[in-house]
Image (cartoon, rainbow, N blue to C red; front, side, top):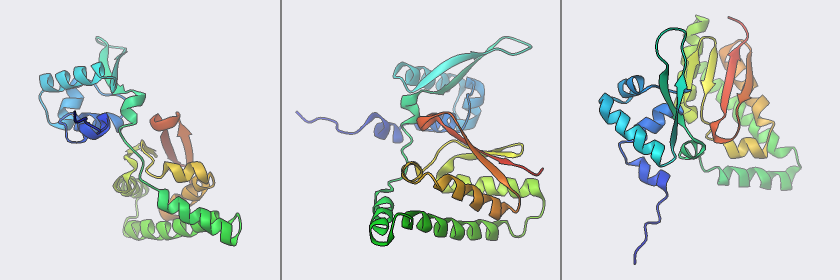
Length: 212
């Protein structure tokens, strides 16, 4: 008997429920009305999809108690839901960096990362070069990071990144975090403070602008 070897996440990739998961990944929780408006589906259609995703363990609902009015029901991703968003395959990059360490010493991997982030800072700075207002520069930088796969959005003076495509590199080379912070600060022209909230696939990278 033939078996379906695709994972649940792979099957969801082509499902109408995938945009719902994507919208929830980019948020800290959405009610059905906001979620429906985001993904362009009807209220009832979105609700049915959310109920099915919750039944299958991808999303979870919680009550959001407000000062005025009835509490809202917010939906968010479960750990299994977060795992639908795989990091990029960095096997080749990690292999090259480790081989460089063997050939040129333990600091070679860090030097390669430094050169990468120097190049990335120049690329970001070029894209920001014609923008003078800091808030507009922050918004543009968030867009650039979003285009790089970080699921970035701007919240006041803070860029929130809800996905790290290069997670395996950050785990193997922890210095990547400080190099990335320096890269983004250099591109923006003012210092950013990088911190991480949460753990695992659900963690959020916060890039706080220290001058605003």
